[in-house]
Image (cartoon, rainbow, N blue to C red; front, side, top):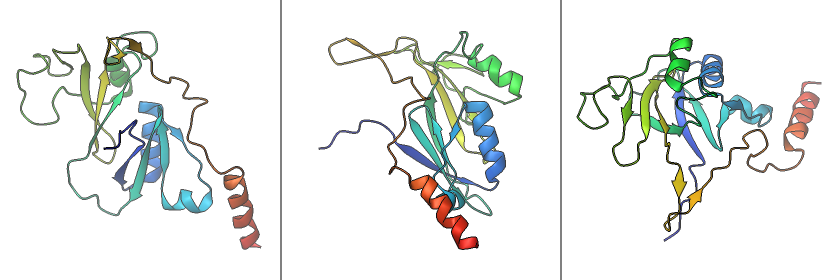
Length: 180
């Protein structure tokens, strides 16, 4: 069997591309991925950490459970000034539950949960398209099967998937030439 090494991207349905882009950039720190004019018209692509969110424009989103989780860098510290405080400042509602009933799992706080086995913090938010996003933070970090601590690639300004050199620039030139 092959081994999965990372979630590359998820697809979500959206009805308002600009509002979705602005929300993901402001709330989750997403970066717009310029794929050239033809691909940009077809799909909004955003990078969050080392993974991507890709969108499908629809007139009316089909109500199906759409959930994905993102690991935040720091739950209570300097970078987010605390993830929950950051959400409050932005006016983004959050909850320990995905909308169903609360269980004893994760504690009794209605806004933030903690997993008993890892100490992981979690809460859920919704984007403008009603997609459910779980924010998680693992304070103990990652380790391999031998207990050796591992780090994640945190260089989100410089790490991205390789593109064909000059593709985006050439596609804008080609589109511009077609207009003349």
